[in-house]
Each structure stands twice: as structure tokens, then as C-alpha cells.
Length: 260
Image: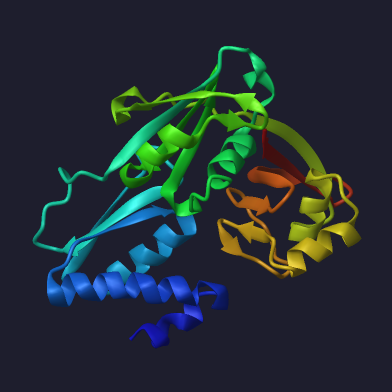
């Protein structure tokens, strides 16, 4: 069955497709319940696609708060009620009293956590807030991080484990850019957003470092549309907020939201 649907996904995703289908089959045939680590939105989409192909299985996705990007999945037989199940998450609160957090960003916190040998899928969304950050983590990783995370980018920190209802959610900061482009080609828009030459953009795209809506995209001529989320490893990410129209000279006006 799983081989039949490989064609719907990028070859790099086939390994995850295999894992996800195994979870679905175990729920259907062995009545097993599986709680995954944190999935990115693309992985959650793949899992949902596979769950929807099996009438006897359902799943719940939860990242600790309503708008969570990274979420854990609970896959179970359809007769099992999932709403009240414990999703085994904790909030790792990171703080410092020396005021140096003003210069620390999402990548600094994530880098410090991964530098302790922690796998990325044990970490959910990271909320950068005044005085530190709140990070969603799996409960099986929480104690280790609480005991061992003492420094973030040369800043000494303290940590505390909090229940989910104490999570502080940061307001998303978007820098608005207004572009005038010849077309909606990905390479052209990425070039303008990150202020790179078209030649410098091609290499990371073709090397598999660019994603559109969390899906690997290696075609520079990919046509973007309103609502698309684009990320390029090492440069950041942005969202196509609005296609505002066409100028008299035939150029397309696009509003971009670049994540801070």
C-alpha cells in the first residue's frame, strides 16, 4: 500500500512515509496507540493523509497551544477517545537576570538545546519572550534539559519546568516588504527578499535547502502564490501575504511578511 503513494511525496520524504504508515497499520491491526515526537507541518500533513486512507484509525495533533506549528501526534484505533489523553509535553522556561537576552534569538535557543545532544523532534515551538524564552519539549526530554541547559550563546541561564497552562506565546514579528516582480517565480522572489543575486539563490535551492509550505522544493521556477510559506536554510523564512495587483508596466506587486 505505502509504495503506491510514494509518487505523491518527494523521495526524501519516503522514510517518514514508511514510519507513519507503520503507526497507522499498528493502530488498525494491533489496536496500538502511538504518541509521536514533535512533527513539523509537512510531516503532520503526510500523517493525516495516511490516516485518512484507513477507515479504522484516527489521530490527534497537539503542540501545546492552538496555533502551534510543531505538534505531537497521537495515532489510535477509531474507537478510542483521544481528547483527554496526555500528550506528554512540558514548558521549559529559560531566563537570565543579566539583561543580555535582548540579543538572543530563536536560533540561539535551539542551537543551545541541540548542542546538548538533544534531537530536534524532542523540541516543539520556541517562544522568544521578554527576559528569555518558553520552549515546548517532550516530557521525556524535560528533566535532562532542565538539569543541563546552563548557557545560551555565552549567556548564563536558569531553567524551570512549567505546566502547559503557564506557556507564554510570543507575538509573531513580521517585517513587511513590498516588492515589484516580473513573475511569481520562487528564485526571483527569494532573491529580492534576502537581497541576494539570482545566481547566489540558485545554489541553495538546487542543493535542497529551500522549502515551500515545509515541502522540499528544488525547482527555481516554482510559482509562488498568496499564503505560501518559504524557508531557506541559513537565511530565514517569509510568507507571501498578498498579491496586490499588476502595475501598468505589467509587474506584479507582492506584499511579503519576513519573519524576524
